[in-house]
Amino acid sequence: MPVIHPTASIDAGAQIADDAEIGPYCVVDRNVAIAAGCRLVAHVHVTGHTSIGARTVVYPFASLGTPPQSVKYRGGPTRLVIGADCQIRENVTMNTGTEDGGGLTEVGDRGFFMASSHVAHDCRVGHDVVFANGAVIGGHCVVGDFVVMGGLSAAHQFSRIGASAMIAGITGVRSDVIPFGFAVGSLAYLGGLNTVGMKRRKFSRHEMHAVRRAYRDLFFGSGTFASRLELVEAEYAGEPAVSAITAFVRQGGDRALCHPRGPNEH
Image (cartoon, rainbow, N blue to C red; front, side):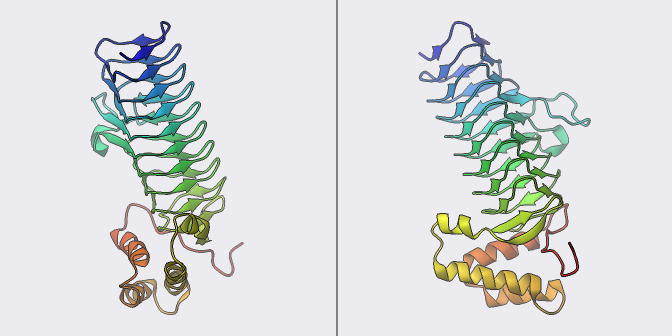
């Protein structure tokens, strides 16, 4: 049987795994599913059509599955799906999706969401991400695996942040950040590559050199950006990390691509 504190309010329709723990003053509504090994520490509110993956720990005053903060939401049974082994710290908020955005907000496994971070409606957040204190993403954002969002950073709605990118603290992302990119600035520009993240993920020296050369050729080479993209695709066809960057660029999105700062920009 799950361990449920007597002050917690659990709707009879909620699905609670046998070994889950629900702490003091938590509220769990009827359409919620909490998987094995989960722990809601205290004062946690879980509502909407929300599922929380195995062994995820949620800290006080987090609010998960509340309706999307969107004027287009029509009250439908949209969902929030949170993966396994996440750490969701104090005051974190995550909203369900909207009908027009696919109806699903999805968060991957092993995410670390520090205090007061936010995942908005219809976002897709990958595995092994880190959202530092106060990091927020607007609706419909796509965040790749191993992304780090620095403290008080913010991503504009519909932005894409590629896998293994790093967003510096107090950075405003209003355009798409390539995989392995390092975005910095009040209005984000590419300040280089997230080499620290690549080292932590055990990329080889050869792989890192290839990504550095491809980055230089793509953003600082001669000719148009389109011609440089074709050149990089051909020259680095055997490099998976570089191919991830070029595929991300080719895929495109609703936002422009984040570029390095120009020589005359300050």
